[in-house]
Image 1 (cartoon, rainbow, N blue to C red):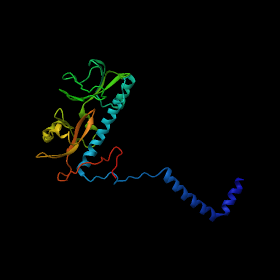
Image 2: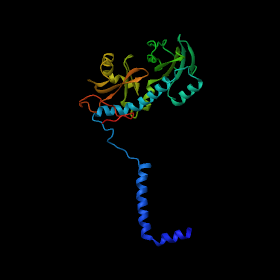
Image 3: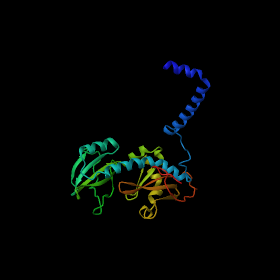
Image 4: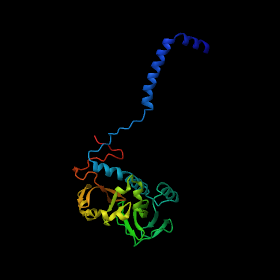
Length: 269
């Protein structure tokens, strides 16, 4: 049977060539659907505003890390188990520690047991009854700032305490593609965080901004001063707003606002 097939095909050369061409053509079409060649659309995320584009490229990787940590901690509504804590440090090795406190504020458990940074003063977390988010606290210690944010845990419907995670906010610059260009402002503490703390004083214009009033009306904008022009945007770290900013790429460009931010899967029409 095998011999017959070979002879038959060899005797019908033109027909075989034609069939082979059709088969190849069909294969190519099917392959493009099942396993398409990767193509990059360089215009898909094109910006009209170069200042917003610069800021988005700087802060998006940072914001992604913080958002992932917030989701992991916020999803834990029961007292953390040892396994949960181990996974926390595996997924987020850049955090400094985690503590579990009861309703009186007494620490029930802490990792590491002896932290590098001790509280400069007692931490005070504020919340509205039945809310699932509590105020973020930034403690400015002798060894630098430490940001704490907590999530409540329960037994049934009864509030039993807080799970509090902390990290040095300056570690966030290690996730930025150009850390020297990114600035983070703590509006409540009236402090600036930069990759190089020695350069923080160069951005005094950002500290002079009345952020508490500005953030009641705006979520993004431009700060202009003798120090230069800054493009800024507010984002959450924990349940509270912090300001990401950078020196404007084109200071004379008119800022007409941000409609939809084209990252994290969002695209503009």
